[in-house]
Length: 281
Ligand code: G3P
Ligand code: CA
Image (cartoon, rainbow, N blue to C red; front, side, top):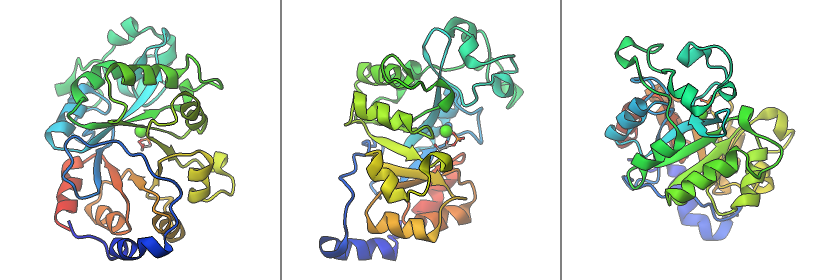
């Protein structure tokens, strides 16, 4: 991978000019290719298999993605389950919300047929199941979805997800993220050392810049959509040595542009394409 000129400049002058916000605590990558860039499979290899399923995660692992991203909600009986929408309709065809059903009831549903008949019968995964086969294999970005977040940290989704991460002994192999900034506060209360990234959300951010948000919420990385990323933000993030991760990038030209801009990683539905683009830069 070619190293962007900007990165070289940062390296050369880092002792003199760069003000680091705080030491970033990013997860270790068991299958890293050591280029300081992270290929992230968005909802698994979701261009090829139904999003947020075992098939999508396993395909991402086969494609040698360095991190898989998944979306987390809670079942009625409080079990962390992997699904993007609180409304079940789009990916299961069922009525109502995820939180209306117990894990046993959710397990009766299937999440593959909407994508392709070939995946009919694909079960809705739990976080515990996915951690069992990703440990020492691939890093995991656990995105906590807003619908399951409560005002207090204890016994909430963050608490429950952290407990599963501890059980799996994967504290150094995961990163938490959320558009709901209460999650950052809960993590700081429950375990300030666990890696965490803020997903930029305009309404909660007010006039704060990425650097100010990273400082306010004491997070390790700043994540946003490629549609939100401005030259001004890039400049602020890179000059302050703040890792930033950009979603969801599926076009090779855009992947190249964002990598050149200094992003530490990209979320893509096509981790194989992203990997190839980055390796050939
Ligand atoms: O974490 C990056 C990205 O997944 C956030 O958007 O809607 O795909 O969860 P969304
Ligand atoms: Ca997500």
